[in-house]
Image (cartoon, rainbow, N blue to C red; front, side, top):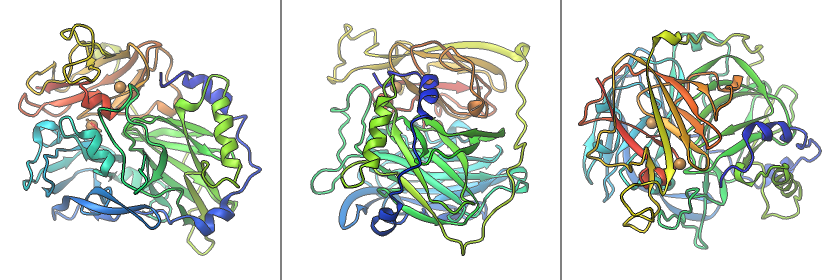
Length: 497
Ligand code: C2O
Ligand code: CU
Ligand code: CU
């Protein structure tokens, strides 16, 4: 099972083990690729943002060319920057020979522009949705959401970042120079064959989903980037299909988490490690004022066992620098004193978040995620020979609306699994977590979210309201964001009216 250790225990045991004694950055400086920074596209100009869905050739490993997919680039897509109270028009064109749907993950937009699987573009087709951006500043993303092939298409490269600004976030003294002190950090794990091709198979994925062997950041392996000697904002997206990470730094430095999926936290939260499930985003501030390199670790959560031994092993392999095949820091930030630094103190207050009163919560719904949980397959494996993945005993069916929700009314959604950890995601909203695995919500998760970790320890509960309609023709989805679970049916559809 993916999570032998509860996240509370882990955070407690991990901080003692990280050591500041080893500096592989001298090696990194000469041998590592530069961190690729996806092109930034202004989404506020009124001109449709062109996103051509196409095949590409990308070098994950220097000198080795890998066939990939991308949006107007070889791998991944441009970062789209938009603002609250503006209109964003996207122009997708599908040049592949298979259907593709593209969803705006984290966006508060109606179902007909949400990009769920019903909105797939056939080969050669285009789709031009106009999105009214009303939500607060946040780091969101867009990615393939094609029925049954989301996992393969995202793995091949169909994902990109979207940044929403607002007047309030503009007014805060946070780093905001894209690519300089405000960096997109898309974490993914990939497996390559001897020729350098991506290896992926939904059929061969185990019950934990498809786990890659090598971490790539914005499509590069152990990249390096130069940053100013001040505050650096990392917009981290776990864009992996199935991998949960524990993120921290080799020197055990404290960083500040300032934002969750749906926007700024009430106040910065000081941390030395943070966990990220597939689909989740967080923004952190790393202070580089001391001039020392910062080496980001993306440890595999499932390799960390109850005694923290997995973590020790991960660290030991990082420390044994003579062995070139072992793990390295996933990303190294090196200070360049010539760059203009943001040395403003971090604001003590970042945003206000108002929670609804108990009396305002009108309805409760329960969701149970199961592996091999379908009722009509004799309890065994489904007709396709794969495990059936279900929510409330139902596998995703494009012709079934599973839930009907009232527009503008607060609800409590209680979610748990029968086994293992799953990142549960809801379209068309941000929500507040009220309980996580039956326990109180840590400060660092007390912000707007759209993806929540659920497990079999106890119910996770979220408080949610939908402010836009979704019809039965263009419903919203809720699903597990382990993409192989989603593709195997752990997903449902709902309307809002
Ligand atoms: Cu990020 Cu329905 O997905
Ligand atoms: Cu989504
Ligand atoms: Cu799952």
